[in-house]
Length: 335
View 1 (cartoon, one colour):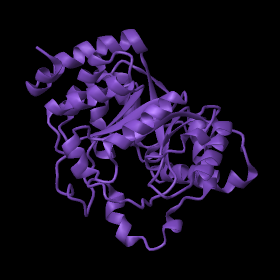
View 2: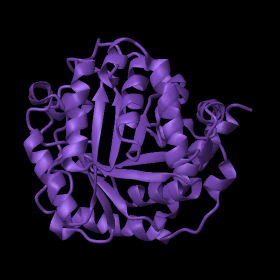
View 3: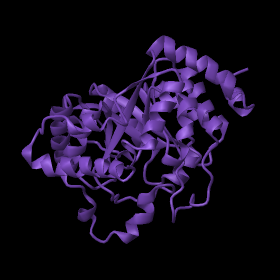
């Protein structure tokens, strides 16, 4: 029976067993914690049907004020380094920062973490401007069924995303896509994603489950079933053994983590970091990794690690202190 039929016939446990064997054989038993660093809460397109930015666009009168201070971005990168996490990518809406600004931010983060940065900042034809500070380019595909994509993301054509990713490959950058499950796709639609991975030579996929946002058409939609989510990830792992897979989950769905690891996840993302670090929620993440038989790289609970490290720039000290104090004060309230 083919993989899509196994998803349709709810044979998730069978898929998990095979995917887990492949993952351990090819990738080993390490699980990373990934942090998407947002640069802005504004998007000048703002019409993706699921996105909270589409609900915010009409409310934001001064887009420049939705930009984060770069010192806050750099402070977050430093704390990510201290905790042993990866910067999954720099993210933000269209029209927030220009290419020169993004390049400067990426260079600074590279100097802080020692690792080049992935970008997930929309469709651009200015990739030639970037250099060694960039590891790869992410295309926010979200849903790969062409008809559904056109309906849900009308201003982000698949053709333009594919063209950008192909250019990225030509320039020597790695290529990634993001996929959101629960947008109305069917198990058969997995074939569109697989064709894209195969045809473009995708190195990494980040999966998310729908997070229904107020004032979007998905506001009252259910999140996808955990075993459907795990089944799609597992089938993708079986289909592409060497693919890097990052899976995102939300605070109310931490129980997804164990099944997603067994399904083939290499890393975990999409956590409200400074709300969770050092709390029972952070401990829950570590427990999920442990009980899936994996070894976590980095920490979600070690407050000492969070407070230990050089300040890469004295201008960042108050921003780093603000984040650290937020985590410490949250823990003091529990005593």
